[in-house]
Image (cartoon, rainbow, N blue to C red; front, side, top):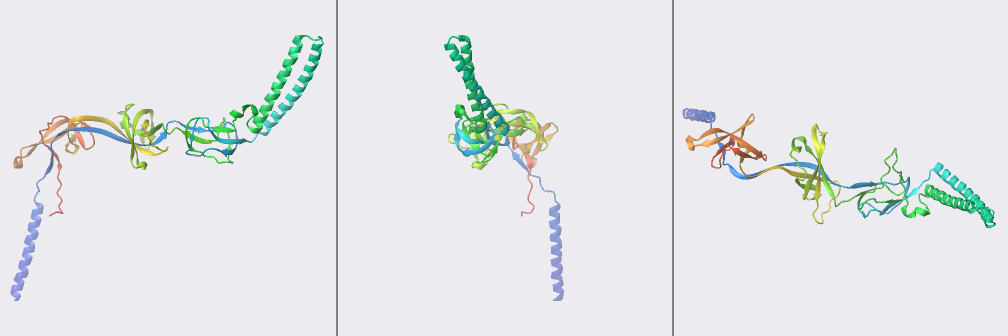
Length: 370
């Protein structure tokens, strides 16, 4: 029994050894190289680029006060539509004490001058009635009285403007009433009742009361790389996609290409603008992020093959044309002239026909599969 057990064990070991040797020998044998094969086809190609940017109104205006003061009333809020001239807010004037003092002094002097002019006129009128003075002197006295009256009214108006920001004579054009300068939607009102505001001057841009924009005239603003800007032409169509609105799409037309590049993340980029064509009833908010797709080049009904079948060597391009079948199959390296590429397929201008077969990349076998 012991002898038979030893023989069995020896046989098992021998089988394991032989199996391992055979397995390793099979693994060491060169495998047949198999390639993908392609047939050139007539197709249309287009090269596109995607530009990121945002949607903005073409005409966005900051409404600012003409005088300094405190916001006493707000008549509108963000989202409201206003026409040019509509009142947005009212400002209560805080008068400058030196200007107020000067205006009050002017009123007092005008009042004194008016009383003196009235006295002089009455005297001249009595003398004129008695024919003791000429008509010329009488008319001159009357003119001085009228001038004094007008000066009193002007001084009173100036005092009211300095003190109240508005006078009785210009109540309709009051600078205390902040009016919209354009028709559109109010995008933002950054002030509240009680906030102090100042008018624009040499040292300050002034306080923005409201931002108003025409939301029916929108543009797409973005940047394109310097390697692609040379292929753009004013008037090129674009497709605008707004991801925040369930991939809402709009047509647009390129209308501006910046003549000067700006550096962004180490690359030179050029600003572009495109007029957005809104669909009927479409509503877009200002500042939405968007992507613009532009077709830079297009070729219709051209011979194409997958770009993976192309061998690039310097400035030349080659393909391997399949000759024969089965064991007689061979590959002939052939120079071709290429054209437009969309990143997947490439145009073949010369060197191939639609009857040729082209070798593609090698098929990599999965060693883990049986």
